[in-house]
Length: 267
Ligand SMILES: O=P(O)(O)OC[C@@H](O)[C@@H](O)c1c[nH]c2ccccc12
Image 1: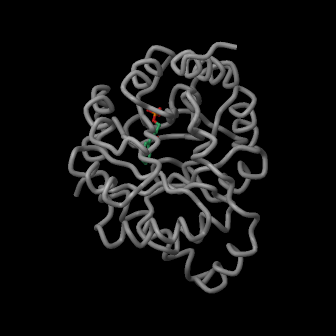
Image 2: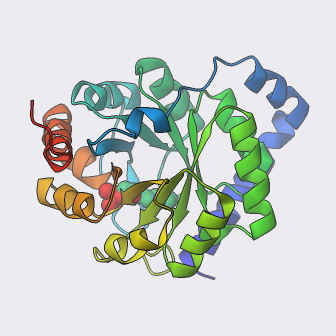
């Protein structure tokens, strides 16, 4: 079993347990009664590199990163620093997240919110919407083509945007074939947990020009933002660097400023 297999197995067990207390028809009614999803991609099509900041307490590779007693407050700090969106890890076992975190964050900010989890079933997509999510992560490495297509369609039908995550050339091809408009390139190999900062530059040229490309993992500072921007990133997704810094809003503002410079604008 790879780390990814383990995470998927755990997330599956957990959603099946939740489904026992909230059957799909009930969840669907909730999701359909939730405020509509916020628009994502059109807002990020300008020259600036959008900065997506993550609420991340822990990870399998690093263990505990930050306590984050109040995710809503942290997300508000990210937004104050200029974050274009907030990613909320809802995986409970290794990342110590929850759907309650997602709901709280969605209420506290005006920018789009991503449910970051190991999504392998329609149930989890409905859950995301019922908690207010505007985006969901779909990890190509965790999904068969038929599942990927089904979950992508459902996400779009519910008015949300899918961030389709790839790690290698073959996955890039599958994301392109899907017609995904938002594609994340994860520099962390979910099988080995190693970060390879050359990943984005290698994979991005294989993706459709029209897709907004998100550089994920291992972004530490302004130089890292500039490097992926030069390789075609329209957005960056940052976790560790923003949860471990002393002043989250200031750290985010520094990355946002780097994203503006990369886009050729200064203000
Ligand atoms: O903390 P970092 O290195 O800035 O990485 C953030 C984000 O890219 C990472 O948390 C991530 C990317 N894809 C994932 C899939 C599942 C869980 C986590 C992730």
